[in-house]
Structures are given as structure tokens and as C-alpha cells.
Length: 203
Image (tube, rainbow, N blue to C red; front, side, top):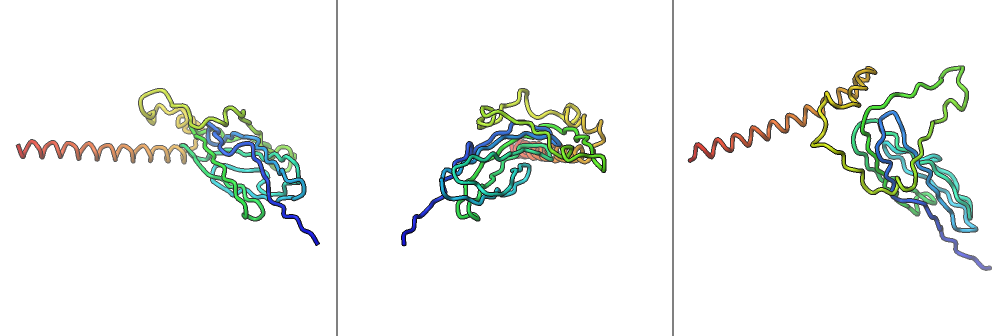
């Protein structure tokens, strides 16, 4: 009796993805290619779940000697930079391939007004994918924004749009962040002035 050992041989097109800027309630997509280079061994796979990023299909079987397309999407729900590590698990997690994902939610977007209810067709529930190019996904860092410092609450386009649509939850969250930043700045200013006053008194 003879036996031949088979080892997983998986290749993915990219392990670091930069989705760039995306508004909340919108999405950016990338078509990831996963190849099972073993000609004899089918491989069970599964992607771990992480916030703001999705993989479709989430799990399945990589057929021997075949390329498979996995749709990765960035769907942010709140403002700010998002960095996550999603893992491709092979054979129940015996083999693990990390994927580093990054994107930036720069404003509040509009919710899609799709057809729902008994009149909806199956295709009405399919997402409208917004694919990014390979060269865009290869960027390691987001471009720096012009201007000195973050915009004020009144000048933020995303917040203005949220106010117009009545999305008060996002506005309140942003306002709370700005208020906390202002409190911290005021505290540091008071501490500095107190130290300067103490120095003058000692002199």
C-alpha cells in the first residue's frame, strides 16, 4: 500500500487592500482571486467576520487547480479610519492567511432607496457593487488632506447632508466627538496657564 501526502497550496491575488475613501451607507468593492494550486485536493475555506468589511462567499470549497473570485467589500457605518485584519482559514483553520484591510469613511452618505415588499424582484436585493482598480487597492496609505486641521462642525459637508436628511444619530455622534476634543483642549490650556501663573508667583 502506498500513500501520497498532499499539502494545501493556495495563492491569493492581494494580502493588503486599501479601499480608499467611502461614505457611510455606501460601499467599495474588490474582486479578490483565490487559487487552489493543488491539482488533487479540494480545500474547505472560510473568511473570518470583521466590522465594516465583508467577504462573499464567506465560506465554501476551493476546487483543485481552479481560480475562485471572492468579493470583498468595505461598507462603513461610522466616520473615521477603519483598519482590520480578516483571515482566510483553510481546512477548518489549520492553515491561516491574513488579509490587511483599510478604508476611510469621510462623510455620511445617503441610504439607498431600493424596491422592497411584495413587488420586489430577486435582483432588486442584489447590491450595486462599486469596484476599485488593482492600482488603487495597492496604495499603502491614504493621501493627506489639504488644509490645517480637521474641519469644524458647521463646515463639514457630511454633517450638513445628514442634517438635511434628518440623520440625527450620526450628527449627535460627531458633535459628541468634537465636544470631547474641545474639552480636552480647554483642559490642557487651563493647565498650561496655571503652570505659568505658578512660575510668576514663585518669582
